[in-house]
Image (tube, rainbow, N blue to C red; front, side, top):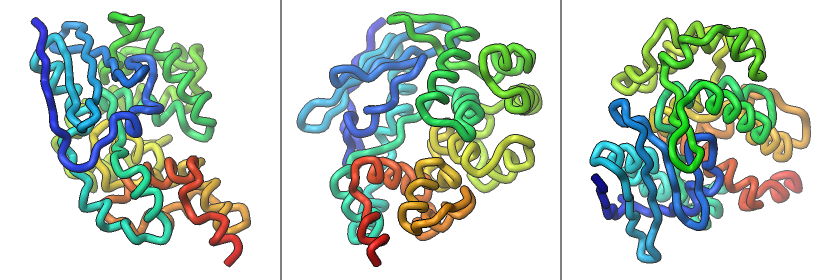
Length: 286
């Protein structure tokens, strides 16, 4: 069965901005087409999406469930117009919000993949972390079309011995913490809990800090109200703003003004910093 779904995104949306750096072991974004391999009720399916010039996003999938899953992954129904209005004249994010107004964080199919991404990304460069994540997923997850793999589930990661992950490149303590957490909680059940409860629950786990929890909330659960405190990009930004070395926890001050939009503010701040859209030089001069 083939399902074609034409979706008019709620609010400003750009697939190009959102998916530009989203390729991983489970998906690609090439020539304007987003391709995702999914595990749908035990079946490996492939789903694709592209955006027309007038804004409509077309999803082509093998089942209704696959189409709806990709719709969620791309955050097509999560209107962020209120955030754009909030920061339109903001000294920090005003220009970035105008230039990148269609940007939304792309999600991963499982919370387990977001948790794996968080552990892989702790205190290392993004490119190195992404290669590590890809190595692990390609080793433990089934391969689908286009040489892409399905995302890991909680049970996939719980079934591993920490030394297996260590052999694939993950630090010993992080590997142990990842397996321990996946054996103690079914991660997909976190979707039913409020963000505050999720943060409180994950914060009790050894090896998980604010940044890792932010990755799980933003990419695994689609929550935009918990920021990426301690992100190395934000550390570099704050260091440039203050002209001195800073600690990861200090980046919370960058996100505090945006309240319930702290997670989305993190995304715009990082993208804006990378594109030279933040007032860094002006702040240093002042």
